[in-house]
Image (cartoon, rainbow, N blue to C red):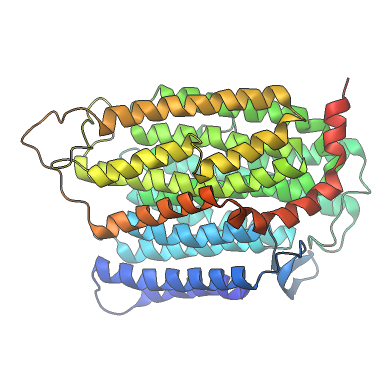
Length: 496
C-alpha cells in the first residue's frame, strides 16, 4: 500500500500531463481531485489497519536496489510518520481547491501538485537513509517551479532563494548520512541496521551538528529562516499551504527521527543550545509578525514561531514533550493551511493583503462574513485557545518541556501570548470596523472556496475537543523513542 501511495500520484501526474485534447482548467481540477481523493482514501485505509499497540514499523516493503552503495527501496511507517502522511494527503486536496479554477497552465500545476505529494510521502516512509535524501531533494524542483511560475511579483528572487537554501539543506543531510555510514564501515544505509554506537562522541557531535543545520534550514529556525518570508509571501496560497503545512515538517521529522534517535548521547549535550535556539525562534517569529503590514507575511512569520515550539519539545526529550512535538507538527499544519487558505480568499476578493487598507470584512451584506468568522477561528486556534487543537498540542509541549528546560518553556508561554497580540491586530483591522467604500460589494465566496476551510475548521475543533484521537497514533512510537534516549532529561536537570 505504501508503494501505491508513492506510485499512484506519479501515475496521476503523467496522465494529467498527457491527456489528449484541450481540457478546461476546471475539468483538470476535477480529475486531479479524483486522484487526490483516492490517495486520501488509501491513507485512511492505512490508518484503520494500523496497530495502535505496536510502536514498531508497520506495512514494511523491501526491495534491493543498489547493494554497492547501500541503497534499497525500503518503506514502512510508524506513529511518527503515518499522521504526517495523512496530513500530506489532506493538504493536497486543500491545495488543489485553494488555487481557484482559472489557474494558468493547469496541466503543469496539477501534475506538480501530485508529484509533491509523492515526494513528501516517500521521504516520510523511507527506511533507507539514501532513499530519504532522494525524496527529500526530489520535491524541491516542483516547489521551485510552482513559486517561479505562479508566484507574485518577486517570484524569481523568492524561488531562487528557496531552491538554494533547501538544496544546501539536502547536501548537509546527505553529508551527515554518508559520514554515519562510512565511519561505521556499514554496507547498508537501511535505518534498521545503521547505528552510531561505535563512533566517538566528538564525531557524533560533528555529524549531529551537520544534521541540525540541514534540517534547521528546512524548518526553518533562526538564523536559517531568511528564505521563508519571501517564499511564503510570493508563493500562491495553495503552494504556501504545502510549503508551511507539510514541507517544513520534513525538517522537524528529520530532527526527531534521525537526530534524537541516532544520536541520543550527543543530543543530550546539545539539547540546552537547541532549546535556546527554539525559544529565540518562537520570540523572533512572534515579534516579527506583530511588525508586519502584509497579512500573508504576518502568518509566515508566525509559522517560524510555532515551529520553534517543536524544537524546544524535541530538545527536552521527555516522553510528554516528544509526544507534544509530533502533535504540534500536525496541529500547526492544519492551522497554517486554514490561515493561508483564508488569506488567499481575502486577497482574491478584496484585491489586497495590506492591513492599512483592509477593513470591515465582517459586514454581513457587503463583506466576507463567513470567511471572517473562519479567520477568527483560525486565529484563536493559532493563539492556543482551549477547545481547539492548537491548545492541546502546545499544552503538551509546555508540560513536557518544563521539567527539563523551565526558563525556555516559560518564555515560550509568554510568546504564545504574543501570538494572541498579532492575531488581534490582524483580526481587528481586517474583520471589524466599517467598510471604507460604502458603494463597494466584494464578490461572493464560492462553495468550492469555503468547503476546504470548513473541513479544516471541523478537524481543528474535533481534535481540540478529542486530542486523544490524534495522540493515540503517536504515543506508542514516541514512548519507544524516549525509552532509548531517557538520559537526556536526567543530564539536563542535573547539569551543574
